[in-house]
Amino acid sequence: MESADTQSRIEELRSRVDEVDRELIHILNERARIVQELVAIKAEAGKALFDPKREEEILRKVAEENEGPIYDTSMREIFELILHRIRDLEVQRGEFG
Image (cartoon, rainbow, N blue to C red; front, side):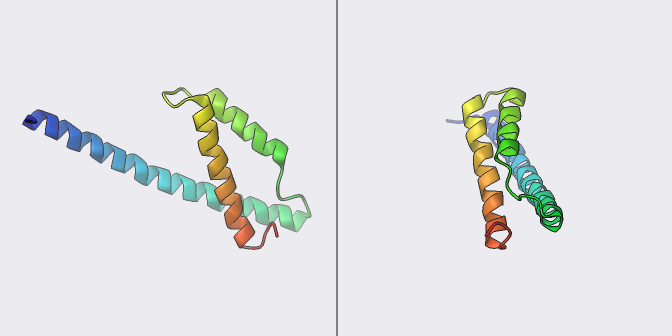
């Protein structure tokens, strides 16, 4: 049987997870908006929209700045997915097509 303290702690931690999730959603959308602006500027300037060297630099920094407990390789995979999904958004808008 769970104590009231245990249940209270579980609810508190769940609430904190929910808040972090809301922050992640906000931050990911902010990142996407910044990338959209960057893509528009690069398109106007006639510059290449996708820079694989820049993407690798981002992924390297992710691993360098990761303090855990998520493994560096896992964090890199998470960011690869973020980068690809934001690029997919631009492809759907016709920016990379």
